[in-house]
Image 1 (cartoon, rainbow, N blue to C red):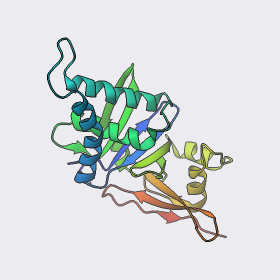
Image 2 (image 1 turned 30 degrees about the vertical axis):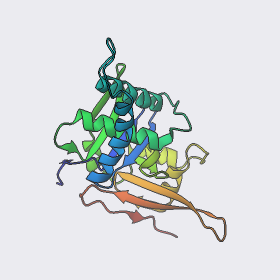
Image 3 (image 1 turned 45 degrees about the horizontal axis):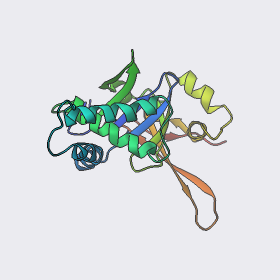
Image 4 (image 1 turned 90 degrees about the vertical axis):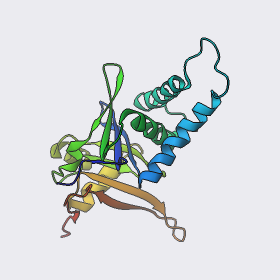
Length: 217
C-alpha cells in the first residue's frame, strides 16, 4: 500500500451531496505552495500595516475569504472571474491551514452541518475497477467533477445521453472496461480540423490500478 500522506495533496475533491463538485490536482510541493500563496498573500497584504482597533486579525480575514470562496463552490455560485482555478487556490490555502505537517495524498472537502469539513480521501486509493470521480481537467489544477458511489451509479450515468453539464463520464464509460478510481479528461481542439478531442488519464496514487480499454467488436 502506498503512503497515504505526503508534503502536498496530489488530489483534492470538493464533493457536493448531489455527487457533483470539483477535482483539483497539484503537481508537486512547490505547485501546491504557489497555489496557496497566490490566494493567501493578497488577502494578508491587504490588511498589513498598523492594526485597526476593533478589527479582526488578518488571519481571521483569510479564514473568512477561504470560507466565502469554498461556500460559493458548494452553492454552485462561483463568479466567472473566479472560476475553478480560483477555487483550487482557496482550497490549497484551506488545506495548508488545516493540516499541520504531513498532508493526505488525497483530500475530500465536504459541507456538513453548515461547516466545511476536510478528511483524507482513503476511498480513492482503493481502486474498485470503476471511477469514483471523473474530472474535466480543463484548468491549471483541474475542474468540474462527477462522483460515483457504486459501479451501478457509474453505469447509469455512462449509458445516459451526454449534455453540456455531464459528458465526460459517458466517454469514459464507452472507452474503458476497467479504470483507476480517478479519471481526468483534458479537452482539446485540433487546430487543423476543428474537431474536439479528450485525452484521458488515470490517477492511481502509487497503487497498481490498470486503465484497460473496452474491447471492440
